[in-house]
Length: 186
Length: 205
Image 1 (cartoon, chains in turn cyan, red):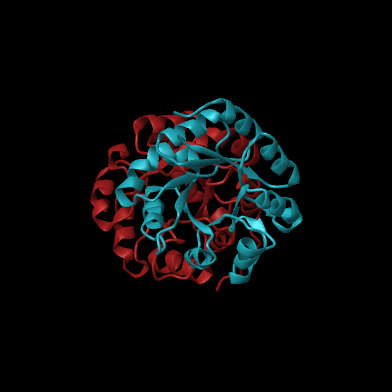
Image 2 (tube, chains in turn green, cyan; image 1 turned 90 degrees about the vertical axis):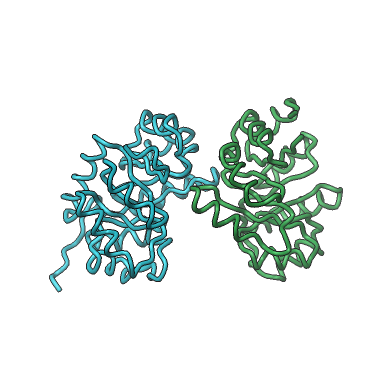
């Protein structure tokens, strides 16, 4: 079983994901501060909000921003490639998801060997479409749960990543969110 | 120092010779050998690949490796973003170009493409495809930087974006990153890639 994590960028896409019944979303890009109200409202109603700190605008990569996300907004977790940010985030009880680029074998191995301590809640492999091919490399180095983001444009691609062992796959496409909820993953 | 002339948009004249040689050689053997460790080099030297990409070589021990490649009639490229000990700037490229005599550099950064052009070495710019949302801005940056060659990574994404890339960038494309099987090589070449780059020695002809 795997989970679809809709990647939203504005109030309209947030509402579309919530209308489809999703209880978790990722703010992957865009300005956090322009939709902070709707996101905080959703978090207050129990929706798990994750933020890609490397992709959103309007936040400084520092402790004050993390405290704001965790304490004021009640968000669930953050994604970043930056180890110091993730270490900081764990102090605020945010779930930490370390982004790792799967662009070639050398870069992937370097990323996997630089996992933060304490261990992140999960690693997010980008692009997620690479997961079926690179999962053996990942599992030879770490047992940390694998998420995937990037270039998932069909429910079939999402299913392939999940069947390869990913726990969570993100997509920014409304049609994937729709198709996926109709396509149970075994 | 000689008076520098204004560089025309697009390809600098000074690298036309080696660039044309490379483009023609890829027409016969469309593979670049990616070298991660020195011990992988002998097999690449013995192969028919026309170009060798050094991924993480130590800058100040690079000379003999580059010269061994060139002695075999191959072109040597160095990934300046990953090389140890060298500034990722014009002076770093000048060292590679003038002291070592590399044929080209590989970089993800548009600013270094301009520096490579000024130093008259071939510029291979990497298009890193980890995020579809970032693709339009990445293509704009490449379109503006105008490298001699684009290296698209990872290989399994290339078929998904080839139409968009080719409609935006009239540049030769090398596909690399997790190209480990003959079928992946063939898929890239059939979709119009000039060559593949791979560290998988079984794919070096």
